[in-house]
Length: 157
Image 1 (cartoon, rainbow, N blue to C red):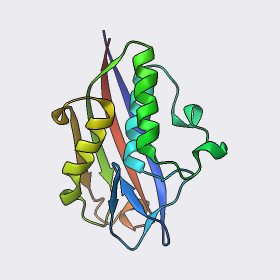
Image 2 (cartoon, rainbow, N blue to C red):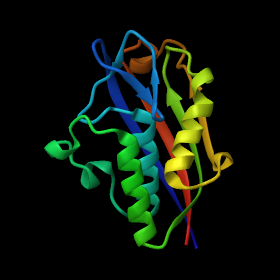
Image 3 (cartoon, one colour):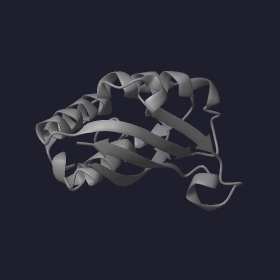
């Protein structure tokens, strides 16, 4: 049996925070604001995985009003999502994700993002695809107010 899920996440860009995407700290003047490390890419991936398994979403699994998750590394949460999937008998088939950000340029960091996500999920790197795009200066991502990410995940059982 195969199941598909879609995930979406968005975070505001602010100064004084680290920019972490796909478990990679990217040197830049701004970072993402959130209860955890605000890794918008990993959050979208987790939502896609949880959705495919019928396990609600990350807000339900890891509530932002729970102090246990304040500042937590999203890769740790991704590992917990993997455990939740395994408990229900699911394995990850593949993930396709897109980060929407006007700046900084992300292409050079994408191979490490893919490796990080694949390692935590226990799949081959070619099962994880990450893309980045700008929005031509349009909307909150285009003006640099925030970043967003979409992800689609295929689960097998």
